[in-house]
Image 1 (tube, rainbow, N blue to C red):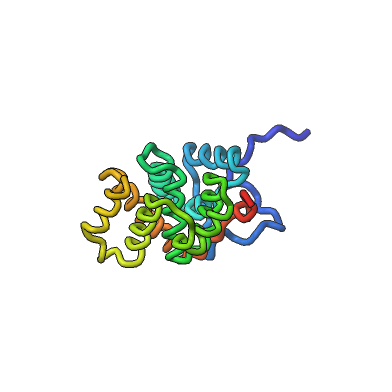
Image 2: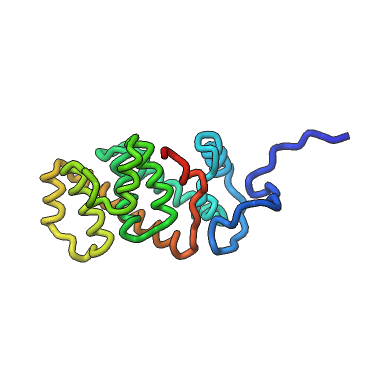
Length: 205
């Protein structure tokens, strides 16, 4: 007689024969996840309908996954003078400069969703400079782009331009922190050929 089994953990789930290609080029076996990270993955599955491939890419090392997710959630979701949309716009502008396929796909979808404007989302992915933006947002993205391409040229005039656009000292820190995080994330995604979830392509079209 068959007995009821506990639900398998994500790292224990069998891979079906028709599974999609790996989420990245490196063949790293999933590691044992903490109860907190197992719960985090289940929450993603419940809220999004899938676990973002960036998280699956880090799942070979529970400590690295925790560090990445904790920093990401603090930067992108915690209280800030920057709205969630503004933080996603920074992510897309930086990723566009770096030509990061994963982040442009994932965060372009987030801009479409948060703005309710698919055209803005597509324009941000291609070239934010061609989008119809407020002076505040243009100053914010100009700073993020310069920090990405020529960080050594950032000076007091650049910070003052943000103040004149209405950003506080803490806001300037947050703009820089989000831009810096995505420069790191873009480079990791490019290094391991991280591939975005197919669901992102279909969202808010």
